[in-house]
Image (cartoon, each protein chain N blue to C red):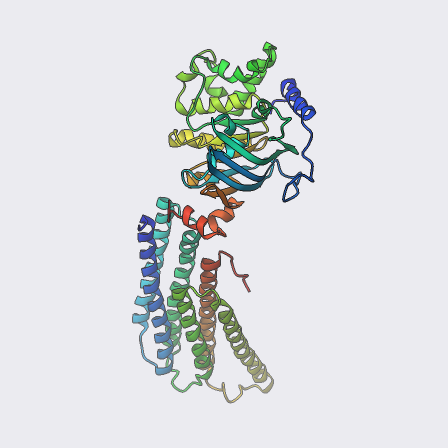
Length: 224
Length: 285
């Protein structure tokens, strides 16, 4: 027999899966626009807003289910985690918007070297995919792989940041920028900002993996 | 608790003199640890030929509230009735095993069940004040039955017990009125006061709020929280949220067996047994 609580849980599950698709699409579309130069700020803003509204809807539903049905055990862990997961998806939307906002602010970056962003975005998109699959299949072990990939993302971000700092120092010493950054501050500033947003998306993909682990095992994975 | 209460000290002394502490090398499977107020070992219970408790093993720490949950007929009430030897008062009902309270096996042949009932108080599902007695006499009934005649002592104990049951302020000017004239919630607290007057060390509560409205239930729940500072409380409840609210530990029983026992926080957030998960989530029963 279906419990009344199950109807609410199904509703939350459906919203979460809608958010998963929309947030993944937002990030990939934002990255595509970085590559292609397409102006899609309005579109990404709308999606980001929709994700925010859906996140609030999940929160409201969670509170309602707690108040009406006092869920316990795996039901309780699931709805608690859904609040965190929906927040993660809404952040995906927000960072997607931040990425396209950088592109709007910086102007054309058609001539910039995009390899660092594209390298990291490939990993981050894979992380999003893994986290969503983990959510669907309740794979508690995915979190390990996500954190390994997050370490790579962090390293890439720090390396790029270090390179920029070293280049600035060389510029001060030689009173000019090295050739790869010369005359293109918008290139490395935009890349650095976008790398930062991707690094944050990577963190949230890990948190989704954490939530899946908690739903399945009842034990919080240690925050790394 | 009532300080300097000679009646209870006398009862306790008598019990200690009458009964040898349980020996560690009895046929226990495990050693009984003194850090527990109540230790149940290999307890079986029957009604006639029907076994209703199957090899129950459970350790209950002092000054905690323990909730026993499980579907109807799983043996919850029988279990707590075994803890003060009330079970055997039902015709055809028997129990076998060890229930150790403070190193004394209450099923030892040398133990007088009447003394056990003084040390282990009980409150029932339906408030049952003595119908012909006043509020005062209800609270004092146990003392008088046990031969306490000192009026001043009885007065003190009645007042302390009614205060302990959070009822004093509501009845202090109506002590001579019939106990049955109180509201359902007040009657239940009067029954708790009656039990407290005997200075029990363990208080058993069998669905103490199932006949009460939410406000009266809430008062009893608050009371459990207060009383466990002085007592060890074991309560049977069908109300999952009540178990989650009032207890420190929860035991889940099913078909006469203890399925899972642990901190309430763990049982309700992350039960280790699938059966527990299914029961507390309302997936069966």
